[in-house]
Length: 202
DNA sequence: TTGCCGATTACCT
DNA sequence: GGTAATCGGCAAC
Image (tube, rainbow, N blue to C red; front, side):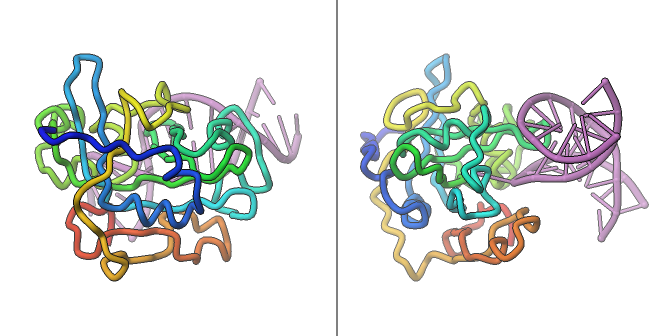
């Protein structure tokens, strides 16, 4: 990016998960590769996962495993896990340590490094690069090696943006792919920017 | 040790 | 619309 970054402080993440999920919309996810190339995208879709009482959450009933350990860290860390044996999913941990909640980043609007993303994804259409949680991890080369990384520093960080997303531009819907969670699957914890063409699904 | 299944994606009919 | 791909955690055997 040509503009200066305004990295979100750790305090941004030490707040209610649903609020963080809403306020992450419009922010910029930046990835610096080992060769110093910069890949970035605007966050356009998120989901909140509300910890021990949320049946859709990996830490429901305070389940502590190797996989979920990062969710128990302080807000501002990453939680990256493998889904279906094939794809990584990237989350932002929220709240203070011991409160295992997180925000899943579901879609980005690609900004910098689009040609690199096309190679990583083996796709040419920009809409196919980051329009899903597994897709954006492929595009930005986010893997489990970055699990537990603090997002206030390279090589993976989130920056503020000049764009203001007003609350009437934010759509709230049920989360995707959590039908097993019963009543919790109906909660309106998926958020996206109204009309944005880069979200994962209608 | 076996079997099942998941916060997904791509490709098929 | 349907389903294969492919790994790891966990419950059941």
